[in-house]
Image (cartoon, rainbow, N blue to C red; front, side, top):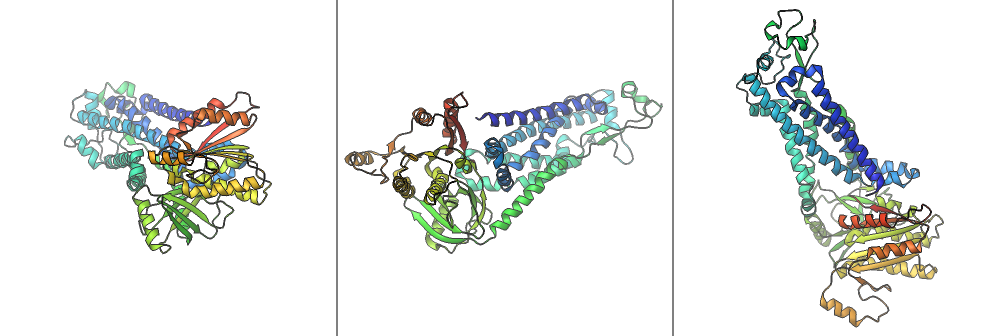
Length: 553
């Protein structure tokens, strides 16, 4: 975990704590809530403080998924150093963090209000002291200045929940949130992406309910009367209320709904985001080439007017023949220098399986919607003198784009190429997963050798799964000039990399360089590499520094 990401979390948590404490004491100590607290006790503050934290986090939750906004900011802050841009790459992590806080505060808020409903009901039944009973019995002709929202002994807490504006919207909000959070679990998102996709759109119901929720004004405060009602003097003189000047009948009002003021800005931004996505998705996309490889990997080469991309960026694809609503992210494997953009899609779920089937039978007849491109951490690779690229399985795709772009830059003798050394690591479980990428590496091998720059690219391929027949085949061809799996001069390694050894070698070969470490792969590997970056960064600012970057969708 980088220090800047940790700093962001600390600032965010500090704001949450401040809001919680400020509003807790506001409701727990405020004179206008003296009589309300007499009935509800500390449950009042425990309901309202989480509500303030919820407002703040509901303001934040949509911003990390406004991808066009983030891409705009990323482009605008190119001159402000990598620290700012690295925070933008944590957008999904921050989105999850905010969601967890919303879930926690919703639970506290809901439990406290369920207790409040019970206290209100018991107070209406006269089960507490005389003051609570008197406060619950307050009425007026307009039925607007009461304190207890339970206006009759026949209105049970359950009935209050399912008949009041605050209660009904609260139930809807809570159910929507539960469905969104549970369907976002890793196992569901990876195995049943469609479930995750559709349930996540309950956020529309969530925000609609959130805006309406406060209109119920179920939490009420004492208003100023003329003459004023002195609670300290009058709380023990219930029978004198309305009879003596010092104790007019106390009057109450619900607080003005404030949630909409917190969320209206992000909601407008998100609507604009979705509108822009819709417009772009309607633009015509033409097929340039379709290739289905034996490893169940589909390569699509597409052309779209006005489409401009950067290295390592990704797009969202939609195939109306499968679903009008589903959009799935894929990293582009083409280079910005090419007159088309391409993606490689592995068969890992229902949607991808259907897409490959359609591509196999209908070829280029099926319509395809494209939204993007969007920026990622890999865009920064050329900002480093030395880069370590680590891909796992199909996670190699952003590095295909980077390596292709490097090839074009060498071919055109681009003077702006700052990068002078690249270390590339690719980990795969199966041998045929190497097939579609080996051609590119062979091309780079020849290009570097012809230009006398064989040391520019150091690549190591790791096969993490094999059987005995494969092992026997490798042993027979052990003395061959090229690898039996990839056809490359660099032989395939078997097993997993010794990362301590790799980082030590990079540090030794680049004693004064800033090294960017880029990963597109599982979170477990990300944790390992992040720790290695910290471990092998020299305390001397003049020596080797490692910066970790990870793709996030």
